Amino acid sequence: MNTKVDDYQDQVYNFNGLWDLPSICGLKIVKKGKNTFIIVTDLYDENPGTSITEWNTKLAKEICDKYSIDYNQIIYIEHTPNKQTKLSFNQESFFKVSFDIYDDKFENPQWQEITKEEIDKLLTV
Amino acid sequence: MKFQLIFPKWRKLEGQTTFNLPPHGAVVFAATIPDYVEVEFIDNNLEELKYDDDVDFVGISMLLTTQIKNGWAIADEYRKRGKKVIFGGIATMLHAEETMLHADSVFLGEAESHMDKVFSDFKNGELKQVYNHMNDLPPIEIVGPARRDLYKRELYYHKGVQMVDLFHASRGCKYSCYPCAVSYLGGRNFRPRPIDKVVEELATIENNRLFIVDNSLAQDTQWEKDLFKEMIPFKKKWVSHTIEDKPEVLDLAAQAGAWYVYQAVFDTSDYIRRRVKQYHDYGIGVEGTILLGLDNQTEDDIKRLIDFLLEIDLDLAEFTVLAPFPHTKAYVDLVKQNRIFNKDWNDYNAGQVVYQPKHMSPERLQELYQYAWDTFYKDESQEEKMFKLLKKVVSREIEDGTFRKPVKDLSRLSFGKNVKHKIS
Image (cartoon, chains in turn blue, orange):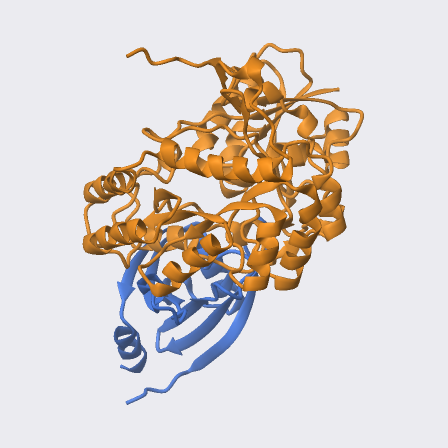
């Protein structure tokens, strides 16, 4: 059963990555109660610039600032879509990323792999 | 103004035949330096550095991750002596932030059309910490012939036989392969050089054997065919990465002097078997490049792959283990999974396991890497297989009148050093 979503974004997001390289990712924002889910999708084949993982400390802060999201209330997820090849390392993956936040800076990213089912559950409970 | 351009040395892989080829990127870069600058090129793999040379400005050109720590140490020495040091090249771009700690300046991107500004800034004492041209690649049309005149030629001979000259006909790559950083370095765009520019450069190269270092020539069939057609009159013999396996392309490649090509062998499929046979049918040799340690490989898969290589009649095989270079998908995936346990860049030589493989221990993958080399070359050593390939090219050269005898004066030297003869 779906719960009501207070706010929702689903878009291709443009950002300046490492060395100002124009970069893109998929961005889904789902606000649920106190928490805001930020799901960034790596668009490897379409992204001319920096990967979401290599830029995540900057990207997470940038998204929070742009959409006025409380740094301490985010559940930040990196999503790599299935590249439709037979190679296992090209399959879909989700990682929940936690950051240490000091003086408005996101640091020390820690990744925890989660399944699509777990994501669905988090979003629908 | 005297500019010393240095290509740092790196630790070579144990047990493998070492060939020192004339570095390419450094002399392509050198061609972009203003005429008023006197350039001296030092290949540190073959020459020791003399830090007290009378030079005004030092450039360090870095190609490989395994080269960078030595590059930094060299820069530190020059800077201690008050010299300004600028870094550039592929490995500089991959490791820019770390490199900045050892540099007065780093140049990121491709050098064409930017060096007037850099050298003018140096002269005026206004050298910038970073010249960021990552997003500002030059038009491919302005890429000119490399400064091969800067090589100390006698250093690139082994027992009188000249090593191939490196050459590029394109930049960038439209593919984005798992272990490769090319898309980060040059964008995911294939940028072929205009054929007349390629021909112009080919005409400047005296060497009759080349290594075309492009990431892959198999990206634009018409351009590839045009390139090979124009290469035919030069009668050069060449090695390259992948070319297309269409009959009309292979036919032209063979006429243009294709000696052997690198072919990635990633599985035991009929596709690979057929492709190797197709190359051979056109008289083109094949060196298989085999990457070990991907997440889809178990120990049995690796052993099966090695057996397969022996079946398909490869001329040579080169084995590597996955090295997660920064800015690759491989790196990003392994970082996320916390599987990289060694961050000593000296060990990122594609022969040393620096991460936790998915289906075996790092030690086991290291053993399988050695097993792959040993098994493939059990009945015929790497040197013997190379000699066979050399004999093939010599026959073709004799046929078309381009063969050059080994240089007698250099017959006792290998890359500038005396050859040690084994006495049995």
